[in-house]
Length: 162
Image (cartoon, rainbow, N blue to C red; front, side, top):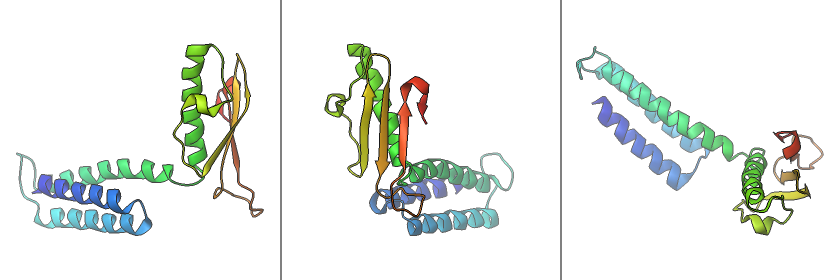
């Protein structure tokens, strides 16, 4: 029963996130469903698979942990202050690939063929044969009360994100 319950809840979780996104209410509903499955397995678990009486409970808990391990990083990546960091990492990968082919870095983002979100702004300040420096911002990422978006900087000579 535990395996079947995990498969059904994994399918429901995947469908809900695919169609409805990572909004708070979707995650709360999914959390309640997984908690209900845990309680159900605890109360009605059976001695399946040659294990003890709580084998179903352990299967459901393992499924819940795997689902959380998938959902949490994806939700964090969608936050406005994390998107410039992700964009800078993609830029660094593209710049390193360009450097391997041309022995220099480039300021022209068109040559790198990046697929970035439109709300993330990237500016390559310096690009030469040795290193590059890029700055990225997101309009909604402002930790101060001044309304000015926070800027994140990638300096390849200093090891990456600064």
